[in-house]
Length: 304
Image 1: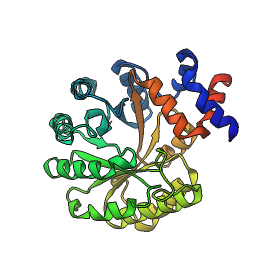
Image 2: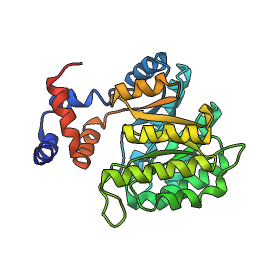
Image 3: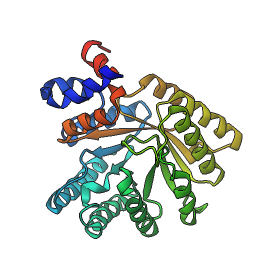
């Protein structure tokens, strides 16, 4: 644990080439061409994708406008390539903490563009200062684009199940509400977030159970075999059709588990991040999750 934390602290000061030796396993590249190349490779394997342009917590609205235009370009490029996938974005990249009205207008334009292609945008959930704002944003977009927008919930937050229940008025049999459930990676206070793995997994499965029982579309985003196996049991128990849920994983993470889920006939979607902000993304995620240091050591010294 101490070694992991030391690596997490030192890595941001290391040469970028060294950091890239680790990061390239988990990030498609810098340019949209890199993301398209990875997406096509995954599609050939029968895997759907969600494309994410790296970046978050901007400091000026000029950057929000640039990010919006880049996302519009991404959507047009990806659709022309006939990629089997959709899009994910972080609202702080579009000014959520600077001007929520501007943020809404930026993201609305992105969702509308995706909707024009009959496609879908996932609103990522960020740290706890953003939770209420992002639920509000989603609720507003869901009413205008009922089949083209979804939301992420982080199961380690103690409020998550209540948040899911409070949005149930948006759900319908014709257009089920669509959530990605993930563990959550931001550092949060113990008062608002579960810290122990067993407790997090317990609530992960409780949230999946509620979603299945209430006919909500579930994106089960996990690399934990316990959660995957628990989801299998609930899928069988409730006889959930294969088009009413999917498993999701990060690019480059637990490929063997990913292949086993796919081999069982379940839909698999891989989150494909790319962009110039890869260095900040990699070092920030490492600080939030020092256990990733073990993967860095393997990436630097072990091939394959």
